[in-house]
Length: 179
Image (cartoon, rainbow, N blue to C red; front, side, top):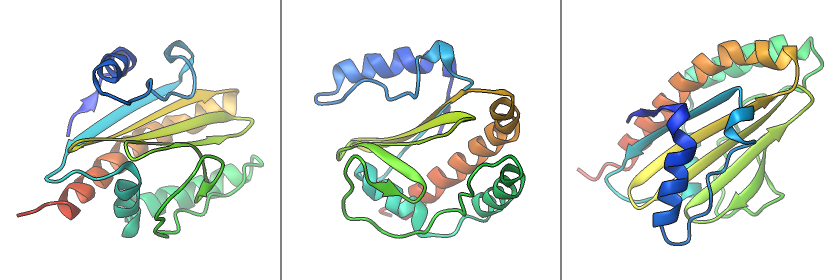
């Protein structure tokens, strides 16, 4: 379940997109040179899942680390006029389409292999790309900041994000294990 070197992410994603039939370009919130944060992590599963099925499985169970991070985020950000996120509902979706919402995320693109989610506000733009290619499931997150608050916000979020995604992918790996 390796982390991807952010500097190599965009070129690797473009190279893999060129070799995977029907795949699109790397889904990043802005060109790599404009990003304040770029992180990708993947896992090889025992069985293939769709991008949405992976989302449903990851969000189906409580994640104490994520819940705590959301509470802290809402408490601190609220004093700066940022709307609360209040965490994830865990609601299972059988389909999604661009323009719909998955909890606080806007769905920008949805297919069996790619689910692209975003949140944009005056402080930062966030895009999370869930990619399901055969048995490989990848989470790629990119962030473009707009001001000092956005930069300060990303300091703890960058660290927490890496731990949360790693835990989510470990849980997905266990949930899809066949033996």
